[in-house]
Image (cartoon, rainbow, N blue to C red):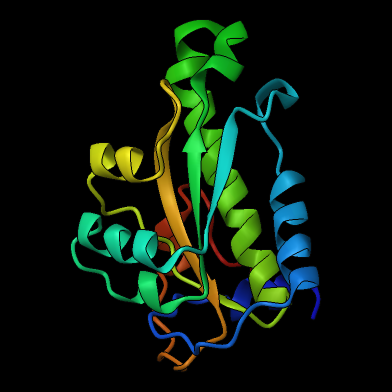
Length: 174
């Protein structure tokens, strides 16, 4: 599958099989996230790997009861690490660190798709509770939780906006 095919194949999956993820696939997914571009190559984010069933169940409660988080064999919590972006001042700490984390999540999602795995970006959660559950060091901020596993469903494709609506100043060539 080439990159464009991978992007087109990626979709949010909210039901996972209990099948464990092979260690080499997990390493490849994490290595892909590590290749994400970042402001000044400071890589101002941290990835927390969650495999413990009790912690995943607690993440469900902290995430508006999104039960599929606990259903996935693993969950990755992507956290902004503002201190790593301090070189850029307040903008680096407040914005670049969050951007770095979100780009890493996107790379992880695409890598998972290319590896035959499924994901669902979770951004609806109690930030303080997730920080407590993951025992995040002071300053780290959870940005997204990414459950990862083998899909137990094939959701319908969701409609996307037309490019002419999405992109100002663009129209489809004749």
